[in-house]
Length: 269
Ligand code: BEZ
Image (cartoon, rainbow, N blue to C red; front, side, top):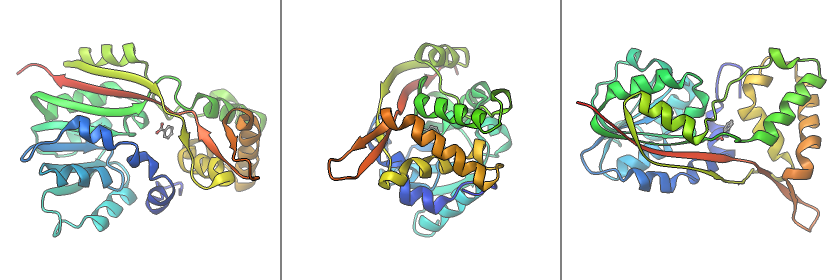
């Protein structure tokens, strides 16, 4: 991860579990041939491509230039006529010149990076046809709470007071998000909040890798020796709860993921 944005290659190599876990979310979307579907926060485009393979026409949108570049390189328009990628901000969809209406909006592991959910839902409502569906998964309330708590403590111990620390993630509770959906003209049809303990790649190095990739809003502007010190503190603090020995001298980190899954339908005309 650079301070300018995401490292798309590392994301695909070491964090492929993000899209691997979402196969059944695509099944829940149940894309139909000929449908127009927006994949909000498409990353490197793996799930957008999976949806397009089912015969839908898909626009993948992501705010990060490196992700869009990687998606276009991996799924060139010439070979994937039903699949296009655009750069745009989910909190300012009206500025993205997307041609609606869409039959469905799909989003995996992206909405929790958008800390103005009202703006997102306003934009999505405007893009969806009446009766169109929103099928999404995001971190739910309590997601990575052990890691986040340790990260905040570590930063404070290293001289970054809590009130100066960012709040880059939005992990809503089920009732909170249902109410938000209703206020923005969506009818929640299915919502579940569930734990999904998630093994991080790379054994012992997995927690540091995860923190460098996803903790970037906290760490990007700190000097590298301070980043190392923070990571060491986090590892020490979370090890008793998140490290699993394999009995052969190795082991793995298991992050305390908790997901909120949503199927909602846009009401109105
Ligand atoms: C998640 O997918 O749950 C997540 C990703 C990055 C930061 C925090 C949570």
